[in-house]
Amino acid sequence: MHSLIVVAHPDPRSLTHAVAQHIAQAITASGSEHSTELADLAAEGFDPRFTLADQALFLKQAAPPADVAAEQERIDRAQALVIVCPIYWWSFPALLKGWIDRVFAQGWAYEETSDAKVVKKLRRLRVHLVGIGGANEGTYMRHGYASAMRTQIDHGIFDYCGAEVRSSCLLLPADADSAEAHLDTAHRIGASIFAPRPVNMERQTCA
Image (tube, rainbow, N blue to C red):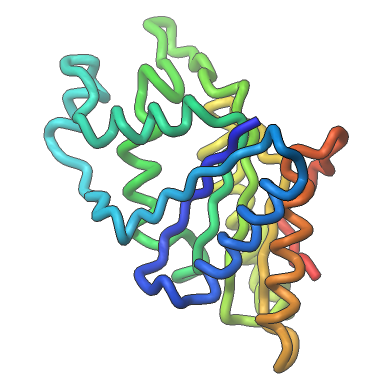
């Protein structure tokens, strides 16, 4: 079983990258048949800008641009997609949102039919979302940010394409040892990716 771990953070020394590495290590340690690929969008220079070429793809007037096709092929090789990112303004960073905008394209992720129905084309894909936030749990709960993110991301993006969100976690600061605790949580997340009976969790804080 293969997983693609997508990271959107410019600093390879960041907690975001450390969390991604711990998840990857736990996946490979959970079974010799399990493998991972890390997609470091910043280091790889992925262009998140939606261009006329992307518009032509959306309108079914052209084939995918080469960089989009390459990303789709990476996802096609995986049974699990793990997204690890910092929370910027209560959502994805622009780099990651642009990756979604361009890669999860019509014809590959979903298909709008002539009778206004949507064909969900990623039903085989299992998604795990890990967000690293700077605000505490009380702030997310008080303002409804966690539920808003669940609606926008878990449902609005992945359910629209038929991909099942198996786990969706927010790693938030609780005390001075939060970073170390987050790495322990990352290991548990990785170990559960290909578990026989994974837990289907709504977006929540993970301790």
